[in-house]
Length: 481
Image (tube, rainbow, N blue to C red; front, side, top):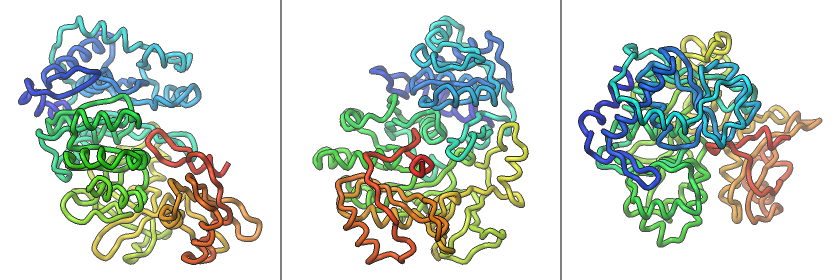
């Protein structure tokens, strides 16, 4: 089975059921299916064929869904482009993926590189509406590429992770099963569809479960509370920065939202334990934190039924094998720190046209995630940060996540990130960047009272906000600058 066959479970058996709320209108599954068929017919008429790439540089919209579904039916490889990217970043993706076209909107088209064949989505929608909605499917191999998702590139040139139909299917089945999705759910999706969090979790959980989804262009803090009150979702996917903002909502609003909600999920960046606890008090819900990557989709998740442990990302998903290894490739003892290695049906097919990078990212058939973690005696995995974030100061290993979690508990601290700075005697030392109305002298005193001396940040820098990617990951390389 490929993605079109999996999605047909909703398109064919729930054709009359409300499926999507977008821009003030509700579409049935049958209407979503028909729109995708019209778009597939149009793309086919424009010369696209199986194996071609199409780059999509668009904000969330129903057109985004049309294009993704059409590409999966044609065997065309979908290449999502971050809407925050600009000339240099887009030029790299277009040069690397060599798409037949870059599909974008009129307002974003000035950022398209000169060497790209630009198709305006407004024109495509107009032409697709006049096409005959013929059933089209040219994919019979689940190992065929469905998308090339480019990594954030925070430590170098971004690479294209090739995700197959089988990768997406394994992920969707796990998400729907392990998080107890049903056709009775109501999903509010504010995450960007250019990222696997919104695309591989949100969009696919909706299509496989047959629930009702409201899609918004983005998460807007000043409007999100109203959306939740109006739509009354039962499931919400977010990133930590969203949940931090939701702590500012009135207690009465939070109580009403929490009373109707079934599941809050957090990912794409570490969720501070203090945020989880504050949210639990305000909304009467324990956020389910999970761990995924562009190269692997979802890997590990706290349980839907059972303890959702603060600071932990839980247990591996079904079919996903995980090991924690030391630099020599040996398994570490329970509680000891090492790098996460994994394999399973969720694992990407490799980096686009980069066999050397693909080989370097694997060891004996296991994918090297670059993430540092520990495993408890009862099997919970806890992330300690990226291997590249590890600070070695005077021979001591310092994991920034430990310091960040401690500082997040202190009065006045809204957000915090710890990065390294060069030091002539110790090699490098930790520096804390703090957002909030807090006393830096008090923070230092608290660290001296509760942390080992080598872990104490050598400076506390107050800033207005942390630099983040579109999905909320802190860009520590910018802090170091």
